[in-house]
Length: 61
Image 1 (cartoon, rainbow, N blue to C red):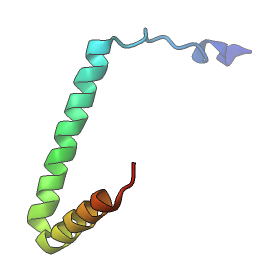
Image 2 (tube, one colour):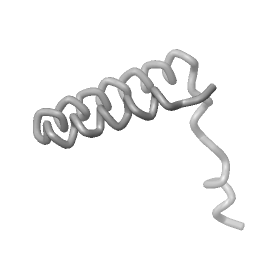
Image 3 (tube, rainbow, N blue to C red):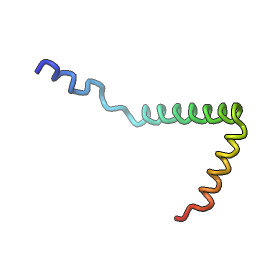
């Protein structure tokens, strides 16, 4: 089968530091997007915050 070389993963497994760096970048961008959404749609963002707070208050361990 000629496509068999594409089945192998040529990239080495990522290191722990690379994974943490990508995760930190993702979380920064997520927080930035959340702040932007709150500025653009303050009423909806406030309702979402209140819903989240209610969920957290009613959560049972």
